[in-house]
Image (cartoon, rainbow, N blue to C red; front, side):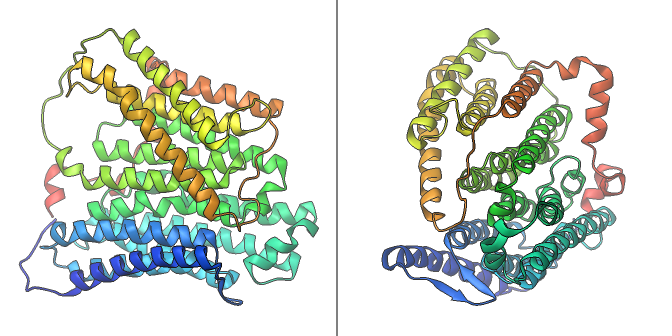
Length: 482
């Protein structure tokens, strides 16, 4: 990326100051409306509810972190003012989106959000690969917007209401055919937005964007799929077979993305696959009926992924690969990781009340937590930057308090979303749920044990599936400097 010296600009300072002011204002709004039970609405365009307030706090915080980082990272960029203007406009559009109640305003802001993200992906105008990435992502986003528009129009025609709140109030009276006609394209729009398999291509091809743009994309933009399903929860929750399908889609995408991550050689590529896997977890939680858990997940994932992307400079270095040497046999490492994961799942279940029985889908949610902790603990234990005894002994001391914090975030989000319909629509565990849970565990076990890598054909298939679009990949290292 070429840079030119330029005079001091006030745009980054003004933008960063504004977004942190909005963050503080969002916190004040949450406190004031919670304490005094104030309702905010400008019918029929805008309605501020619990989801709006939670997302305003999260969005402004992530934007503030990214913009603060970018003031130095992007300082020498020739289009630094344009970059900050896009980031700030993107933040304002998302804030408007989560408050929008009229379907026309909602679809409009959804579309503008995607177009702005495409521009951030193609920020470097002189880089052909960045422009190819922009065009590819823009096609995906416009397709997703069209699907969303079709679904909302079908629901609007069926209920006779032009607002989301009006649609949700009348959704019980809709015939199954109308519900399916509305739910199917909206679900597809959510899958495209969250880059679930097979719509993951745009995300893995978007690494041409500046690192701060990647951070806000992985920390916030892709999460809008879960936000969409949460906002329209009753449309899906009253259709058991649709919810079961959402569980299946999320589980399959999670397993495949974890497998693809193993065959990716570049750091950002692995982060991209990791995001796809985490979005699979989020969509799966929506399918289980735990929409508050999905919102909590997207917030926690946003924190984690923003940190990883903004710290990529310390990871992306040219060096010869080395073999890891572990101080303990792998069976000990696996045992510690497994015990930590089970204990973490128990902590989550006890603090949230989800997974304490085997009769409802809360047990599936608890298993997701166990699997996530197990994978995270295994990766940390296999990192030999610390002595083995420190890693093995300190793992439970680190992970269990972290799980307690996660459970606290979930409980807090659940309380703030209490005014949403069907914020927690967990259902009974059916044989189909148990079958999906078994396949989900088997898939992650096969990834963890490397079974998928032992098949050359499957390895090549995963490698091809995880490839970015050819036009978005630089042909040689010198092109990164153009």
